[in-house]
Length: 111
Length: 113
Image (cartoon, rainbow over all chains, first blue to last red; front, side):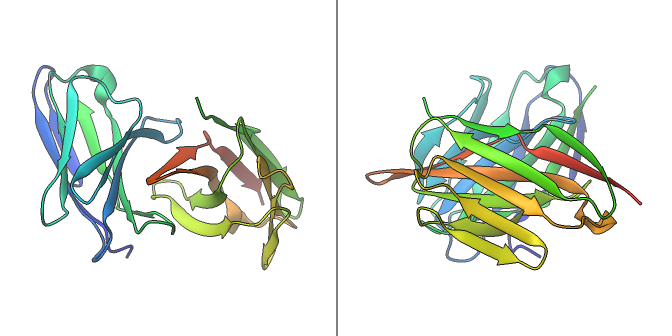
C-alpha cells in the first residue's frame, strides 16, 4: 500500500460527459501529480500541484482541469469526454526531493 | 524543452539472459529515478541516483548515472520471470523552486521461462 488513495477505481461513462477523479496523497506529501496511461503507452504527465498551487503542466488538454484543496487532496476533472480519453489515470504524491508514490489508478472507459 | 528518451521500447529475453534499458536526457539532470510497473499494477519506485557517475546495486539490478548526469542505465543480470514489467526512468530537473519529473516512455520487458 503506497498510502495514496484514488477513487473511483473504475468509471464507465458516455462520450460528452464530465467526470471527476479524486486523489488523497500520502500524509505529509505536498506534491500531487496526475498522469494518463493509455493502453500500451507510457506515462503521460498531465499536471503537478504543490501545496495548493499549480507547479508544472504537461500534456493536459483544455478539456481537463485539476485542483488541489487546502487539505491537499486533489481532483482531476475531465469534460466533454471522447473515446480517446479512455485510459488509466494515476495520481502520485511526493515530498520535495524524494520518490513519487503512486495510487492504484482510476480506469476510465468512455463508451 | 527537456526530454528523456528511453530505449529500447520493448525487450524479449529468455530467462537467465541479461537485460539493459537506457535513458538519455537532452539536458543535465539533478537526479534520476527508476520505477517498475508490473502488468496491471502501478509504478513502484526502485531507486534514485544523485551523484555523477553513481552506481547502485539491488541484488541482480545495477543502476548507473552517467558522469555528465545526462544518461542512466538499469541492468538486470540473469533475468527471472518475476522481472516482467515496464521499467521507467524519470529525470528530475530542479530549477529554483520548481522541481519537474520528466518520464521516459518505459521499456517493457518480457521474459520467456
